[in-house]
Image (cartoon, rainbow, N blue to C red; front, side, top):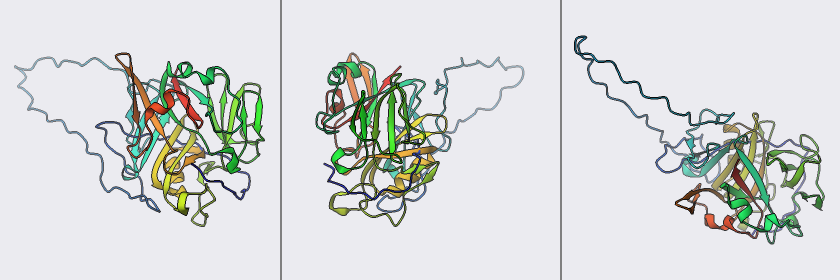
Length: 330
């Protein structure tokens, strides 16, 4: 559980978005620059698969070469995952890709909003005092098209920002804080409240959480940050499990899960994935989560995007005690 946090507010910032994903079974890994803190970089690199060609036949024996039918491109949406990262396509949804970086410590999940819908589901305990619609209390309303899910933010009692849900201001929204905003059409944006995000009739949820970790493509994490700048860590450790969400310039999104990493590593990987605005989500041992879902033979199959995630994918197939974002196919 996240301990109570008192934070010092920074100057108004704009949140950055990032897009990253973790390589699934059998996929090559991309290696990011060396991490500071407890993250250990990998020195390996992805191996290219070579093709052995036989000697060409003589003209007399030559036969017309068979032309393979053109298959669909891996990315069928209006956006492409950012270059420079070894993304792996997620077969359950054409709008998802994952990649593993930083020697396996960090997983990125890239999401194409033209092919996906986003649903904020309040927890049964947190955010505190949150109302809940009938649909948000019935898991069948989000599991029918569920392809991924990830955790929300800190407790409101940690004093890390405001919360707006279905017309109710549960906690006052604070200008300059990082926020995720979900609209009635299922779109999700990450930004700075009072700057690029403001109240409008189509807003369903606004969830603030600290100030931006990436603002206009620039890291806001510094070596001089205290243990309370980005959330109070258990036992005041510098490197803990952390999660974050960023938005790229093209509107696509990237969720980040990191195992035993510091805020500077979070920001670095978000920026490497192209995030322009990004916000911290939850942290410490068990709260950061990221899962992929598919149906096989009528049965739900959930997969952790990173093996260091402590909880089971089944937690988001029903109501959970903390808020989360359900990612659905359109």
